[in-house]
Figure 1 (cartoon, rainbow, N blue to C red):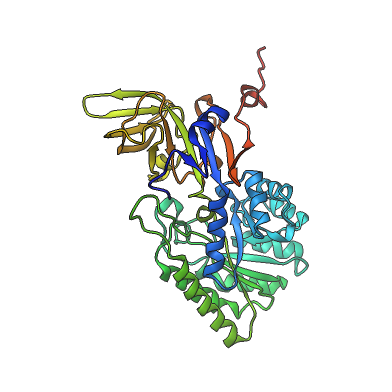
Figure 2: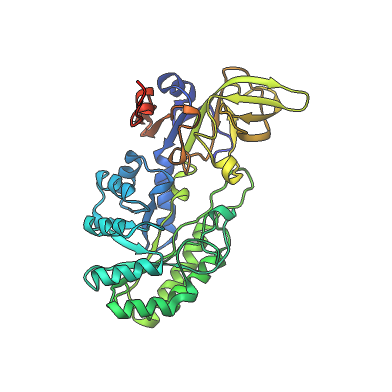
Length: 407
């Protein structure tokens, strides 16, 4: 998060970006992504990082991640196919689908992916189909309610994700029946975790189960590391987490004589702060109670504020010296569509450029063509140069696949 964001990013002005690529525009800073990866590596003596691709799946982002020497976590065959095109080897791709057909699991095996299963019926089918010929992992639901919003809390008892920790005996029964090669145990309790004790509870659960699977190779703590969205906001203490988990993990391996690997699957942590949505002001609309700033984007291009009540800092980069006023920034789709309410900002004028921060994760990847609006272009700042990594949608793309049966 850059609360004092200036008029440029890595020496590239926002005005230049708007003139060259148009608005709305997604912008990603490669240096920030690299720094986030390094922060994890410095916090943990030994860690296997798998980038959660669903946060931001652009192929250039994936290839950049690969070039940093990390793996990738995917949740669909399509994400896996993009990861392969980005250069990831099948062994570097963890496939953790949810509620998919068994045919998709078969396709993942045929691709040579690491398979992670999250329900008993699929585990049973996997065992019957593959026996011990192909290894897999198991995603567990630890019955822990954690995370910043119930919609992104995935480890509680009412979540659809993972096999309940209370079904361990059923898991072991299926594994023994087919001699399934369980190579990994995985827990992900949700996003925006700041309580480090949640990770330690996950460690206790995983350590307790590690003795029951003879082929075990790694323990996977998922992601969920919280990033700050505004000054004074809470965040995960990565250095302290690394210290505690590394010490606990090392002691476990030493006591048991095992050499298990520690895995994590960060998504938002790696790309959120690296991303910006650049928008232009269409209108400043004063009403008796609210002054609205209407911009050329909407929830169709950044849904997090409306879907998760997510906070994103908004900065007027066209008028940094303007007097402070209170605005509600809204979008241009036909829907209640608020990016930020009652925000103090430098005076906003028609045509001013605004930057919405922390937009790298679940911004473009959740974008749609609602209202038949075209999705924006994406740009990546690499070594001080703005490089286009996705063209803006065209009307032809919007109509592609549609069939006019009355023409």
